[in-house]
Image 1 (tube, rainbow over the protein chains, first blue to last red):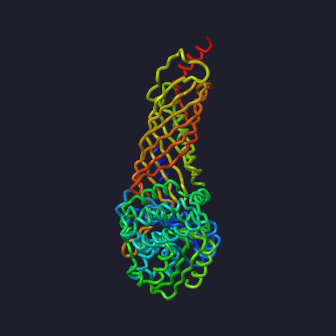
Image 2: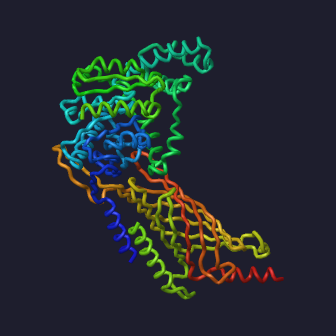
Image 3: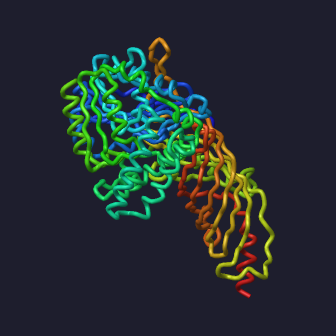
Length: 345
Length: 218
């Protein structure tokens, strides 16, 4: 009897995985892509009837696309386009068992390619697809579009505070911390907080070890909060506001971020650069940057802009943002993405 | 929602059938308690059903049995449970646990318990799961999900109606932490809340209670 109930439940649970594909102005449907030991969650939300899709490639590694799914974006982008929130492997709501050996960039590019293939399988091969890469997501998107022909799968890239060259990134972070720090001290603002940062930058001048790179990133994350004109953003408030309505798997998100932050993958990333292959990029590109982004400084975006071959390219700098422009200057983000997508879809 | 209701009815029906099968002192089930609880993982619904097998009851110093907050009995059980919760868009988790249960019952009927034990979890992804081969061919994976080893630990409070009334059940609120591994090469923790009833067919405490009451009357 008990065994019978067990099997009945199994059968009913399998019903929860029934394929559901909707074309309408207000869609919210989640599905998974299983690849190399990971089941990666993809949430499609908004207007699928318009045949235009915007996929968020989140930062981290190990953060989550859940954090980008806000009411403002739903209202100002999701009303016209379908927003696609993909949780990368070992991130957010993505699941698996022992799969750390697959946590590397080449595998993640393969994951991204397969996510796009499934999106097109579900919603039509003729869809217009744009990628929004934020922070580490910018690096992943860069890896993707600089690989042979993969950029042809999408209509354009929106790079938001993204990296493409980690060693250069460290150098530029140090320079920006040092120069902005000195300016802030000269203005007598948060002197006690800037001084240790300036001292660190003065004594660590280049050829950074992994630990030095991590320390610079830590200082960079703190630094934007010492600038008065930067709009405050709290990840805790974000989680408290959206965890229940957006059905966050909170403990999965925490486990994944802790694991990813400590994984050897970060050592691989620390020496990764796509500067030499950026000339392969020919698709339209929009670069959105926070003026006070110390983690991926504006100069990194300028380097990206100068190296790509794309004719249609534009860079916009938000005066009130640090590293999280999507959430710190959401109006600018939505306005710019709207214009870009409308033009190139 | 209809499906959820159906699960609950199925499990409830099963529990009642077992519970009503034979509840006399001669019953082979006299050492078993039957459990049905609403399981809530944060805000996500679920059900838990199981059987507790009575192992032992610690002998008590009867002179200490006074009305009030004194402990009437300390019991140990082994509990086998089938649990399920539904987290939309994330996963359904069906897990079996084998728990060691330590329960204290006060003379007022209030109980507290602590549980700990291993288990096995089978998750089902919260949506259609696709696989893409190198040629770009796409297929749907049926019943996609993962198997995990599981450890559960928890504690709770409740009330045993059989202590003061002739009603063989207890109600319990309990918080468990389940940990599943290897989850993305690490450990996944999840808080799970239980609210429910346990049916106790043959009270093992009646003699103790009578002794307690007679002591109190003196």
